[in-house]
Image: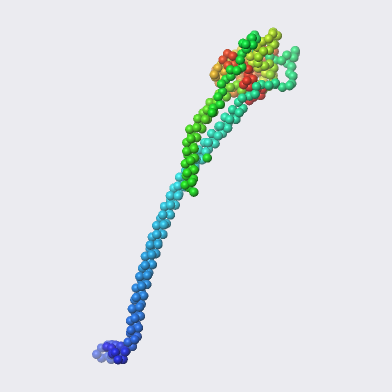
Length: 339
């Protein structure tokens, strides 16, 4: 029950028939203020709820975006890892290829080094020292007696064994590797062909008599016309006579096959080695032959010992180079001490 005149609100609480009633009186203003406060509180709570809901929605949206960003970054990281793995694989493969290139380079350097040493200077004077051999001071010379021909019929030294010298961010790295891959493909075609040519040249070089056949470098008689040591008349000398001591080693001047290992009253113990392309070398007056006919020999291999067998005045090696049946000057191929 309420009364407008007193501006108060009164409440009576009746607890039972035998108990007195309890009365409460509250000013109307307080009720109004309390109502307004309740309304304001509810409104504030609603506003706060709406704000919190909006904030939560924003946070959830931001979280979703963050999760999306994280997922994207993880995918990018996984992609980068895959690219890095592929890059490492390509790098390892390229390293193997660079190792192959290094081997090719070593081979080419070897061939170039060999070819640079391949052409000896013509044999010059053996030395300024004078050597005497035997009781009469006669130089050790020998060989077959070949009557001197007319100047027009002299063997030519111009028919030589033919030699023919055969004619380096992930995206940037990937691009570089692709360029290197293209270069590698070119190399795979050109370098093996070049090496094959170089190997062919080396084989020809190994089969060319450029290895000095003795330890001694003292030439006692040169190629060409000379006075015959036995008859005294003019005669043609088909090779080089190299003086030394009996038993000195004699070496193969080039790779080849022994086609003769015999004894002859003129040549004494002698060897003939075929080097291919009709090119042969001859080693006469040996005291000992270390190889037999049919054997393959390598350049610089020991094939016998120096001696004075056959038509000879003392221990020496008579060394010949022949193109077909024609004797050519060994000095065109070889000089004293060439190895």
